[in-house]
Length: 231
Length: 286
Image (cartoon, rainbow over all chains, first blue to last red; front, side, top):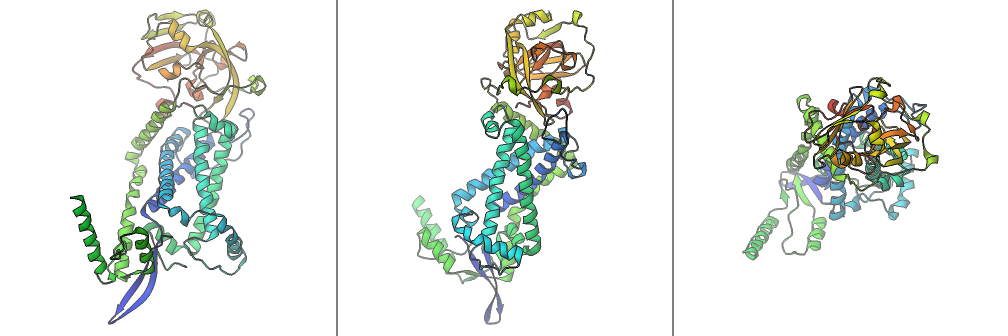
């Protein structure tokens, strides 16, 4: 759907030689949201971990059993107050890009490119076999393979959950119904933390895939145009 | 007029489409000539790929890359001279949003006695000392500012107001939380007793340990905001803020000052609060 393919040609005297193809994969709004969100996520994770350092536990305060000692060098903000400033600033940027992205995808119909549906279920296992067990590469007919769709759809759900759990932690009284759904402030805080790790797991896989065979993918998220697509 | 304009547009598109198919980097393929219906346009676009030469594709890519460049403004957060002010504004926006979300009629969740954190496991957080050595016999609350009856108020006068007991969650900015049982008079009742001008914006308090705090009037008038003199049905202990502290279930812990010595109703804050003045949120409503 919506893929606008062009041929890249070279003029050799009278002859026109086709030297490549390109597809416009990522509309500007998606590209902007991707990079702003990447920056916001980086700041939110860094500052979130600094906030976590103030009470690195999900148990009682007395007696306190620390879950892990996250190094200050891998955190943003320097101290709790500073980290909160970063967190409470970038959460709005994160929320805004999320809303713009979701709104755009929905109204433009571009979501079809990325949304994992029942039709993609069958294609997941062959992709897993290909990636992890040296299976043959399944033929691809669209921008994302079923496993990619699964990953991207999941991370968007995780993004929504990170916002919802975040609001429950930030406003457990005004959004008491939201905190209640999660089992109260205490559990909302734990869920917020767990959702972060789930998103980080995605980011890790995402970056590995980009490093392994993603130069054209990487460029396409900047220019919109994917050179020599597999479909 | 509009009709004519529309016609002109179509003529332009027609001219574009009649150009040779090798174009130097138009971001969108030219629209086909006689297909005004959108679906047909899309169908024909996909069927007939436009061709660009390599230089044209580079130009096209560069132009699209430039369109993403505005994200670089976020780099301002990395500039030391701008960072402080940007984050201050970010936190200010958050506080503004907090204020909008606050509803005086919305109560903080309350809990069963069985859910209480035992008193001995209720943390004691101070910025200075657990016990600033208040001499109870001499203690009064000094009331001033926009009130009709300023002066010294004794604990008995606070205790004469209707007593409220509530099991509410105490959330610390650090992230821990406990459920405690608090007893005291509604701050709203006390403000009525002293003839406070409740159209003023703030209620500020000072403490025996030089800690200081402020509450916005909306929060001060919230029915769960207490001048608290009891915890777990016992008189406040010294380390929990005897003889009088704030209990504000709609605010984070640092707002709930202990060992109160004075209370002022005011429109102007020269200081917000001990932690706020070091960079913490001014409103921090839960």
